[in-house]
Image 1 (tube, rainbow over the protein chains, first blue to last red):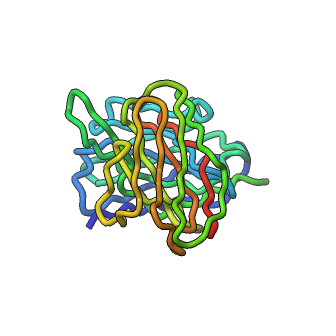
Image 2 (tube, rainbow over the protein chains, first blue to last red):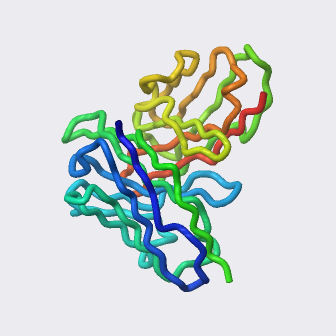
Length: 125
Length: 107
């Protein structure tokens, strides 16, 4: 059974740093793109960042560029999100998710099929 | 970035009703469209991927259609457990995945 388990959330002051981890079980992590998605209190879903199977490509939403870094350790079956210079507006539940390809290698079609339970990050003084 | 616009933002319906939610993309995304259901306090759950493919384990009262810029999620006969918020997401541009604003369904 595939499971994704986030950890590392908590309360941090504006300007501070925090690292989220996502432990994966029941899948070969090196076969999948992985993503982080967040949800501010009472708001909708916002994609944050994605990383390729080998870590060779990564993309992120403009609002976190230069502050957040997505990374992975396939040998340890884990995904990370390093968050620096945190702002009040980064307060959210952060989910890690597996990006499944149901297309072909040359014409991929992705969707986020497995999600973790989420980790709450609160940025407040 | 590709913008995703969902409508309505909320709706109220009765058990047994047919419910339709629409999602419009700001440019063509072929069929790179996923529908999620999120209940209060839970992680999102996939209902439909590739615009019209039903995720394993999802009841067949849920269906999706569309391609290009216009997409529809239909619940053929609304059940009490369908009370949730529904989101669409485009994965055509993997450099910037984007979600719609959500549709809250009340029963």
